[in-house]
Image (tube, rainbow, N blue to C red; front, side, top):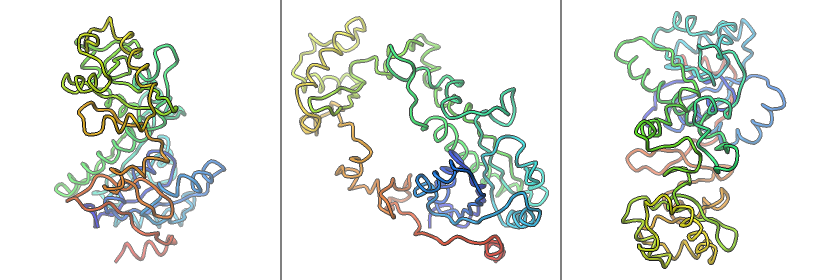
Length: 361
């Protein structure tokens, strides 16, 4: 059932982080009702493609939030809910008559989770944007990518999911825990700008001590170090090298047929030449040959798998990192007591009236 079994959460359907957060909460056992609305072409494509994974584990309840009758029924669901999560721009839920104050008057213990790009306050709160814009403003995007090219977007993992959904889940869980003892909920304001900025905490610390430069690909963890980057192999595949510690670096050097004298680790002036030397070595063999060559060593060399390849890797198979529920997809994480990850089987959608009856039991 999962550690959140018994908790009831209303998810106001949307794109991006609120959907991912709803999936995670359902994966951990919460009863999540996804209140769906009519949408345009983008929403239709998302439901057909991305929703096959991101909507797992919870039932959809069609609603018309502009209808007074449906709005009253949603407030009835709130009577039995522990939390509500939504991802509209600031003020939209208030205009629909379902803002935090209205819901708190109905259920003081309700936790109201809100995830937006810019946050509920600030001069840009009402502006539009996407993941790439939020992480650009937070400083998280600039360090990513080759030094001689514009920054490279890291998919939408840092803003939508890391800085948005994960911060929303953490905040909602913390607030629900507090509400159990105080009987009072909170409004959780999860802004992707705030969250993605928080993810850069280590690098602000390093920069304050002169250990991190704003120059891209010139630092320890951004591909500047020859022992922490990816290399192309003979067959067009890639390997990832993460030999940060001297002991691991020594294993890498041995595996590449080099000596410490010709490959000093922390001589930054020699890093460009050393990178070229490593690149030439890795280009002499296929990706999987290198993976087998370094297997069982401390060199921290792994193949860079495509998303299609990753589920078939023996380690991922042994752990059940991916599962098949209609389609192959990442399994729930984290695990509790070592239980094998699983998702709930497909669950039929409900009408709003049916949902009210179930939640009043």
